[in-house]
Length: 259
Image 1 (tube, one colour):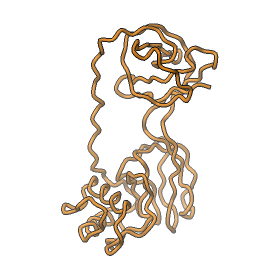
Image 2 (cartoon, rainbow, N blue to C red; image 1 turned 45 degrees about the horizontal axis):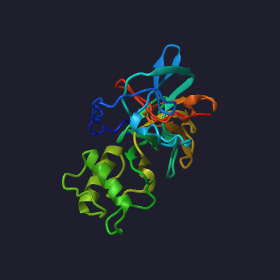
Image 3 (cartoon, rainbow, N blue to C red; image 1 turned 120 degrees about the horizontal axis):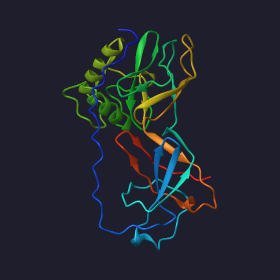
Image 4 (cartoon, helix red, strand yellow; image 1 turned 30 degrees about the vertical axis):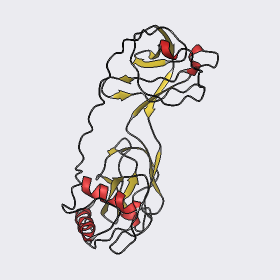
């Protein structure tokens, strides 16, 4: 099969648990902000937890946990809606690029990230790209663990043990993946056979064109989590804002940045 998507076997993520409203009174304090999106822009809501009123404020603006509280006061600020994360997808190995996604496409585990020489190159989830051939007889390593986690998640290898050891069962599972890719079943996985990214990605800008030689950047991508960035003045009381809120079931804010 040439240049068609690999059907992923990924369970849907469960929605985050709801937190109960606490009994503590919340009053106005510059230093805790909640963002909401409306037709005219972004509204910033100030909350206060009395038990935290004497804590020193932090100007490094880290991401913190979502809180709930009663509305005390509001102010408005301009914000930019985007996506968290920035990634470069490399077209590894040799050959010619024969398939590319379109800008805006969302690629998840097992889906085709790009195509080379008429064969599909799928996306795997992980923190480290494969840097050596994965095969029987190799030394144990985290890359083997990462490979087996993805093979198991995609439904390859009923007898596969997810650990750091490449066994005959791992080779069988790799063979199943290779069959789905439309390449010769060898049981050995070369580094350029898959793309490894931390999670699902959304294509932003294509860097390669069909017919280009593989080995360079294929495209730029982002994560799939929505993010709002708010610009605040230094003299604004909300300059120390660090708190974040989830809006509905689809939009999540994970940082508020001041300039």
